[in-house]
Each structure stands twice: as structure tokens, then as C-alpha cells.
Amino acid sequence: MGELLYVYDCTESRRRNARRVMFTKELYGFLYTWKTKLGVKEKRKTGLVDECPGSLAIADSTLLVPNRYQGIYSDLFRRYSDIVKVRLYAVTEQLEV
Image 1 (cartoon, rainbow, N blue to C red):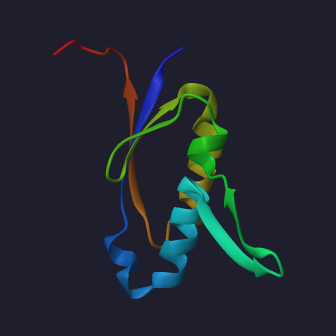
Image 2 (cartoon, rainbow, N blue to C red; image 1 turned 180 degrees about the vertical axis):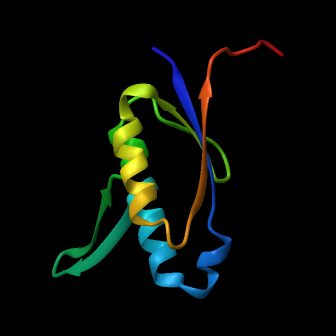
């Protein structure tokens, strides 16, 4: 089926911190906590990497994604194109090291 390699950079977003945080949360998910009468509760909100089986963050700002999720990931990067620059590569062969 094949895989895609997304390499992205958020350097422009340092001036727009809130959008960068939202992008990161949508991509990787986040843990949130709240206080109740019984104590502190926490829950994890999944991100795109969690929701798309086979997706893998292989390095900082580099994702390996199955071809079938290209539309979903490309849509996310398109929505944040004002702060994120992305390059997309088709992985045709994996070599053993």
C-alpha cells in the first residue's frame, strides 16, 4: 500500500503561539485535568497520530503515515498553512541499515 513522509516546520509560528499549540494538540493529542469534589481527574484527548493506525512520529516534525490517510493529514496541514510549512514524500522502499 505504501507510506508517506511528512516533514514540517513551525518556525514561522513562534509569533503566533496559540495557533501552533492548537496545531500540535490536533496532531498529537493532549492530556487535560480538572478538579472535582473527589479529587483531580484527567483524560487524554487523542490526536490525529493516535486516530490513524499505522501513523508514526519518527522524529521531531517528521511523520510516517499510511497512504490511506493522506487526505486527513493534508487537510490538517492545509488548515494551518499560515504557520506550518510542509514537505510530502512518497516512501517507495524501506532499506535495512
